[in-house]
Length: 171
Image (cartoon, rainbow, N blue to C red; front, top):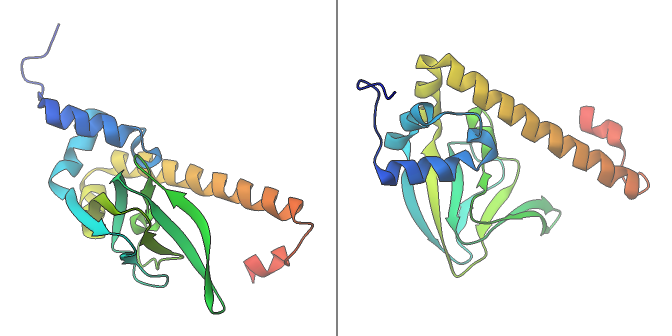
């Protein structure tokens, strides 16, 4: 039996929840919890070769790709090395969930154009302050994401025969 006092969502809201729910950081959240993010979602359009953010910038927002391709690069001397390409249904700028974080990579649009959903850092902080369960769920997902990245890093390190000193990572 349906609760007559429970919140009902529009088909557009449900579509947004389905989309967000497919993204690692939001996968643990129920619709009611994701609804808190609706006022914080901003749509932005970018053109090819436009920089979304630079490495070392303050992490001021999380970006979710609705359409297009974004290249995540790191600076190596005078050039850039692509570390990952993200597309529809993927997020980047995940360290914006953390306080006082700086970008670790540069994000550049690599498709003709791109449509991104942007969630500002301050929105996360407001939602987390009033909803500790949402924060716990999202931080657990973030920790799993970082753990998966560490696993990939160590696999890559092993397969490259120790091309660099892994100990430098902790110095």
